[in-house]
Amino acid sequence: MAYSEFITSVNDYGFFLEQSGKSKDAIYVLTYVLILSPDRTPAHLNLADALYKNGNKEEAKKYYKTYIELMKKEGKEIPSEVYKRL
Image (cartoon, rainbow, N blue to C red; front, side, top):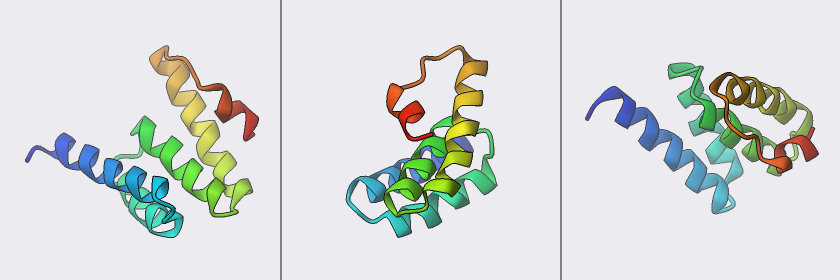
């Protein structure tokens, strides 16, 4: 498996954990993803969402802000929900 595929798979796993209500596990996995790949845009959003749902709203803001910066660099549209959580 290529490194990029590995990072994508681990990020997806973290996302699925968060979506299934396992925010604490998702936070652990997604933090690991960002240690390995700090510019991975979706991981910032996924970690922010997991933190937000786990009640760590102030910490989540940091990751939402980084997500916005990365999305702007990529010229991509930012979901309105992200701005609502800031």
